[in-house]
Figure 1 (cartoon, rainbow, N blue to C red):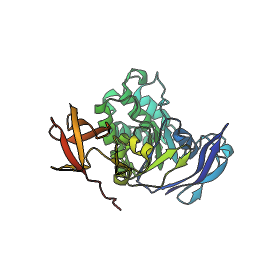
Figure 2 (cartoon, one colour):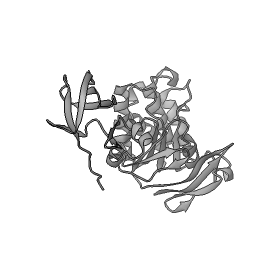
Figure 3 (cartoon, one colour):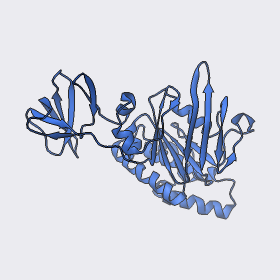
Figure 4 (cartoon, helix red, strand yellow):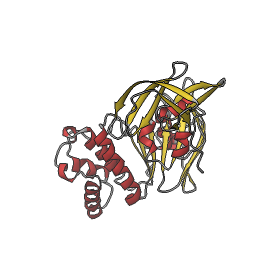
Length: 310
C-alpha cells in the first residue's frame, strides 16, 4: 500500500497543503485538477524527485527517505512518466528499453525487454529510433522504460495529452493491462476528468493545493456541490428554481407533460454515441440534455438526480 500523509510544499507560496491519500496494490487512483493546481508537484514528491517541507511517504509500511536525503533523486519502487517522456531519441525502441533494464542480469534483461515489447505492442517498431515514432508510441515506450525494473507504483502525468481519441482508447487498454499483468498501483493525473473517470477505482480533486475527500468515480461525477470540480468531469446544467440553484448532468432528466422545467429548443449536435441537445431555460440559461435520438422541439422535463452510491 502507498500512503501519502500530510504532504506540504511551498515555493514563493504554498503549493501543496497537508495532502493525504492512500492507494492499495493494484488500484488505479485518479487525480484531477486544473492546470496549476499542484498535480505535477505532488507526483514529483511521491516519486522522490522533490522533498516536501512537511509530511511522509510510506510504501508497504516502510517509510521512504525524503528526496533531499537521496544521492540520486527518485525511488526505485515508484516511477514517474512525465509529459516529456524522457526518451533517448536517437536510440531504437528496443535499445531504450534495454537501457532502462541495464542493471538486470543479461538473461533476465533479454526476457524482460521481450515481455515489455509484447505487453505494450512495441514489437513491430523495435528497430525504429524513438524520435521517428508517433506520440502514442512514445507514450507507451516511456511507460515500458518506467516499469522495466518492476516498480510497485507507476505515476502518469497527463498521459492522454496530445493523443487523438483512437490513441486514448488504446492507452486505456494498456493501462488496464498493466494493472492486471504487472500488479501495479497507478496514480493517473489529468486536468481532463473524462480521461480518468472510466479508469479509476477512486478519484481525488486537487484545488489550490488542497485535496478533496476520496470519491468513487460514480459519486465524483454525480455529486455537484463543488461546481468547479463537477465541470472538470463534464457538462453541468444549472437553473434557478424557487430561489435555489439546481444543478444536474445532461442525463439527469425525464421528459414529462407539465414538467417542472419548460425548455426552448435551440439545436442539437451529433457525437457518434449520443446527441447533445441545446435548450434555453426559463431565465435564458443554457441547458444541455443528452439523448439517443435528437430533440427537435420545445420540451418540458423533470430533473431526476442520481442517488449517491456507496
